[in-house]
Every structure is written in structure tokens, then in C-alpha cells.
Image (cartoon, rainbow, N blue to C red; front, side):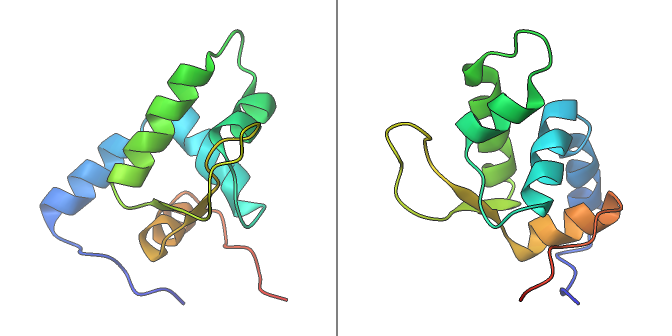
Length: 104
């Protein structure tokens, strides 16, 4: 379906480390259900206690820097930057047991 990303042991180790955090996993799982997702939208749905927006933004930035996400448009003043999965992000979702959203 999607070509696997670089499968070196270093990549796989880094991918495991990136996917260890529950906020990152939660963001990717939410993103699997839609085309785009912003940090603000994710915070509203993740609501684990008093999860500050700054924490969600940080973890989204980590996913972006690792190449699992990419910006999908201009920032909205109320919602922030929308993100979508990259092929590497789709691979990570499949590794987590989530099939990508089917195209209509």
C-alpha cells in the first residue's frame, strides 16, 4: 500500500522512541480518522486531565520533525496549523494497527 520508509536499525529505533508517548499515539490515531488535524482539535479530543495545549503542540512538532506529519494548509486563528499524515506517518499508523482512511 505505502512504501516502507528507510528501514535501517537507526530509523526503527527512533520510530519506536517517537511512538512511545501516549499523546503522539493519540494524535496519530485521531488523524487516522480524518484528513487533517490541528493541535487545538487534538487537545479537545485527547483531554487527558489538564493537558496543556503547549504539550500537544510539542508532541505534534516531534511527529512533524520525524516526518510522520506535514502541514496541510495555512494556520487558522482558532484552530492552528492543520496537519496530515505523510507516507511514513501512514506506515507508523499501520505499525500501530490502524489502517489508513480509505479514499472515496
